[in-house]
Length: 97
Image 1 (cartoon, one colour):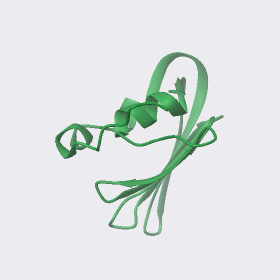
Image 2 (tube, one colour):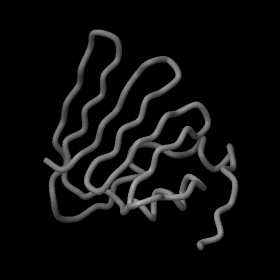
Image 3 (cartoon, rainbow, N blue to C red):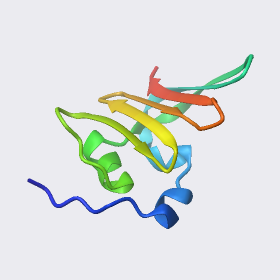
Image 4 (cartoon, rainbow, N blue to C red):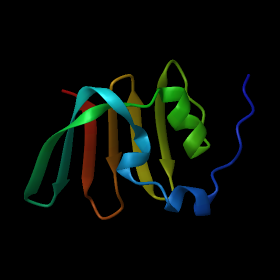
């Protein structure tokens, strides 16, 4: 069983959507929904692994999946797909294109 440290708010505050993306090959679709507005873009890169993201957030991945709330942000991740829902209701999804 891996050693998991508790989330450190000062570490999580600095995370941005770019923190979850690895540059290189592949295409990712980024969708941001805020109220009635929706922004969609396709960018180059790939998502970091579930294990890498779990380590960044200080949570544990179970069955290659993350379901957690960190610093008020609901996070759901599985291979190839990351969803975040913020306290203000905004949502962001990053997935393979």
